[in-house]
Image (tube, rainbow, N blue to C red):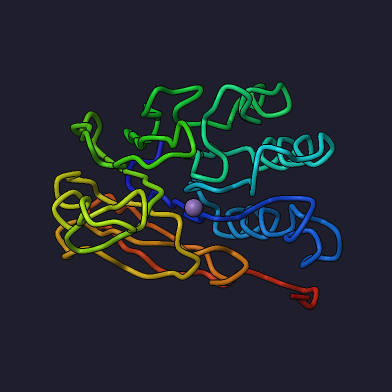
Length: 245
Ligand SMILES: [Mn+2]
């Protein structure tokens, strides 16, 4: 139980594990950004990691690398809640369904293992979000899930604009607006799709992009305090090796 202490959540997104661009940027190992994130979670003694979309760059990833990701998550030994994004949606032939990932007990893929919410009784916490289920546009907060636990954390992978215009074309897809953010009523809203770390919304709900590990070089650290307060900070990732881009 976590009675009396903070619940610590590490939030990142857009990790883009692959055997292509990300691998070339990290001396051949496309899982390096994920390793850095999980190292940070361990250093912070985190209770949970949120991977907020585009964890994989695509679904065509060599088996050895998928297995490595499954093993890294298993070894992290804390719940990892993953929202499929526009690069890695919950399609029929998604990597999420392969044994290397589907059999990782602490990996909770929304839209696959859970329809749209993962409930953690020991933390009195629910994490919910609507997965990308294809490569087309969708509205991440078209429907809102009401609070079902003391702590209500939402995830979405999309593009923030204060007031979405879903009529004019061309336009960005997967729009998220201020009113929708407010309507979530979440204690924390974890966002993905942008590479930079930034707070968005009108402030009614703490809504943050974490940015990608590669670009932001940080993860967001969310502390849910016993008092009910929520604190959000950024934590530097360790990058011992020089980056090549
Ligand atoms: Mn994206």
